[in-house]
Amino acid sequence: MASQISRKVEYSRLVENEEGREVSEPVSKPVSFLQRPAYSLHLIIIGLALVLTSGAGFFAGVLWTQNALNINNYSSSTAPKIPLPYTQTEFVYSSPFSLAPPQGEGSGDESEPIWDDLVPNGLGYFRDGKIAPKVSIPTTFHQLHCLYILRRAYYSTRSDSQLESFDLGKNRTIHAAHCFDYLKQTITCSVDSTVEPYEDDDNTDGFLGSGFLRQCRSFDALKQYVEKWRVFNATGFLAAGIAHGKAHVHGSEGQ
Ligand SMILES: *[C@@H]1O[C@H](CO)[C@@H](O)[C@H](O)[C@H]1NC(C)=O
Ligand SMILES: *[C@@H]1O[C@H](CO)[C@@H](O)[C@H](O)[C@H]1NC(C)=O
Ligand SMILES: *[C@@H]1O[C@H](CO)[C@@H](O)[C@H](O)[C@H]1NC(C)=O
Image (cartoon, rainbow, N blue to C red; front, side, top):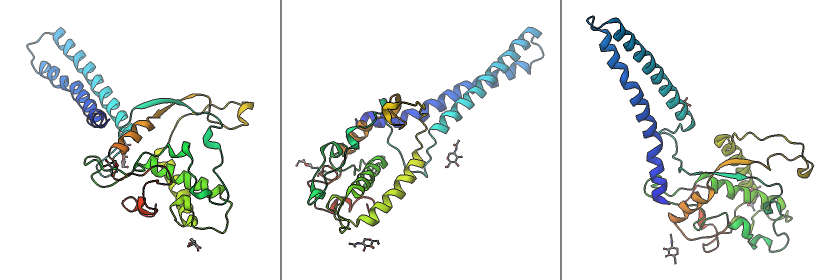
């Protein structure tokens, strides 16, 4: 997994630059043809044709490269991304993730297997010495953690309790406010521009978004990568295997 990922890091930009350079090189040679008056007219025409075609190729190469850079516009001043393979996925309407969490006395300590299975051992905190020399977490796992916190807070019937077991003892009011803010910012940063067809389908009660293939990035590949480079052992959203509150000490503050 690690070697697959680092190979992809090197691959993307180099190939594009090399192609752009190859295409632009022939431009200088036909120019030297034109500078010699001894050559006959048909050679000049061939030369001009070469200039025009290689020029067109050059501009096509420049446009293609710029277009590719628009899609992958990372710079040294922005946080790196872990390259991931693309997958095809179809959303389903009303998946098991739409079920309510356990409620009532002691429910904050009850785990939920399908949700916990989203979280790698180590909760997504990793350090690999390359893309992440310091302890880091991919946005996806921070997002999922926030989604889980908001969901449990929404369903919680215990209005008296600000400090919830499911949230590692954190102040729910403060943490939920952070999650709404954080999820808004990550949604408008990652910008999933999938075009969702509108179908007036009775089966979905007017909810859009399911029933067609989407281009997704491999969640499983990311999960495996951060689990391999994890900085501690802990599983599930309740961080089984680690003392409450400790899971976030090395990560992002206040999470
Ligand atoms: C790339 O990102 C920088 C920084 O956000 C931005 O200023 C620039 O316009 C972007 N370039 C393209 C081609 O999108
Ligand atoms: C949690 O934070 C809110 C907002 O700052 C505050 O009003 C509340 O008293 C806090 N609850 C606890 C138990 O600390
Ligand atoms: C996780 O636990 C296993 C088994 O006890 C141990 O070999 C490994 O070093 C631990 N990993 C971390 C990052 O603590």
